[in-house]
Length: 239
Image 1 (tube, rainbow, N blue to C red):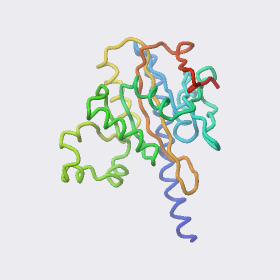
Image 2 (cartoon, rainbow, N blue to C red):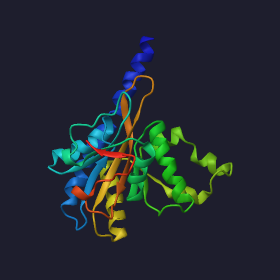
Image 3 (cartoon, rainbow, N blue to C red):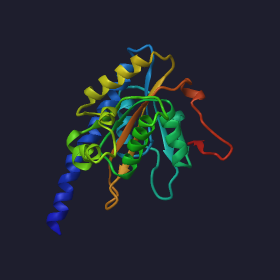
Image 4 (cartoon, rainbow, N blue to C red):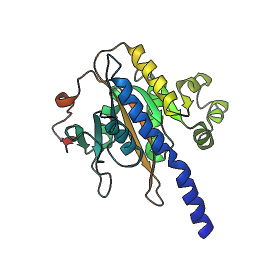
């Protein structure tokens, strides 16, 4: 109906603010990197929507950024703001997520759908079970997340422990998220480079890219030529 179409359009306008916040976040991170002994780079999923926003923020401030794209049958082409020599394409989601996560020092989850929830809960589960080192998990937009997921119900029914709520916190602005990420980077005390990775989700009904999850990564490798993953089955190729 026309009224339903109008409601969906209004909701999309409201959600579009996350693109601008992610763009600003990318710019803030890139600027801050110039002040740090350990540089910070944006590395996104390489696609459109909020992933594009992260690369765009870095690009507009004169910085480099990385895109770890995914080969899909009919979508997900690299966006125009990735530094060309730092654009890579994966064939498998699992390998792509592995490389995002194994170097991460933080995760920032913007409102999203199945893909975002997959990323978010995998990291929560790995930290909860001690399978990976702890890192800040920042959920962008308290209103969205608390409406989507009743975390208190999970505690009340014994599905998670009360202390599991301490695994994440909510943030509302790019500035707040940046403070948390920089604090995490400084706490690690590691040399090398750091990157922030963004994943996008889609609205299954109309195909609009509306949101993403974002993770900050601290690789043990330097970036540039050495930031090149591959295996015998070609899970990652240069674009």
